[in-house]
Length: 254
Image 1 (cartoon, one colour):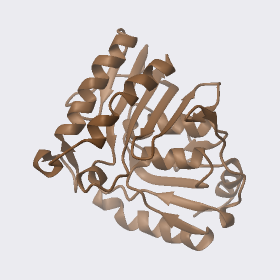
Image 2: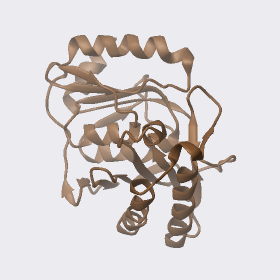
Image 3: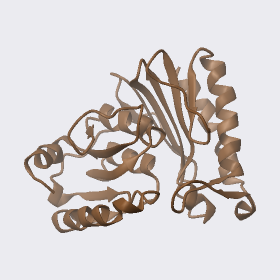
């Protein structure tokens, strides 16, 4: 099934790469600097059709929907058609397509594709993680030797001060910090060992459903700020890291 999902995701690459007059298609959503474009909706429509052809009985949860069904029973596709929409609007060339697969509320599959770099990350529960078909693993570096990526939770202004306070703490303890504008890709950068850690104080399930499993299958750890397993039914803080940094993280109140 994962390879069928990979083909469905890859089929949407041209929608991003060949997009024109993006500014004219932008619509505002609730929250600070929260946007959607006609291209987000187009990708989601294609994925809905193709993914449900693979598994017709599955629930489809897409970011650009008004009503979301429960993912607690049976299969579910949890989809972000363009993660990094602000980047996409500004033609920053750092956005991706993310598809997570859940069974009875548990993450069992994930595909994240960055068409600009032609990097496709995939994982299936218990079978490891891959980038463009080759196995990947998290790094073994300590925090002091690592890059830390973070998200600013821009739609939730009340989290701004705390987000940047944490970023400053990690900037002092790590090599440096990075901000890409796409949580799904940041998770994959942890999975392949480029970054040692990623955090964001509030993300939606479609932001982390695929990438979090890819990190775990690459040997990493993903928890919320309380150290608990992520819940696909609600927004959550997300802290993803390699196993070495996780041991440091547990001992320190950053």
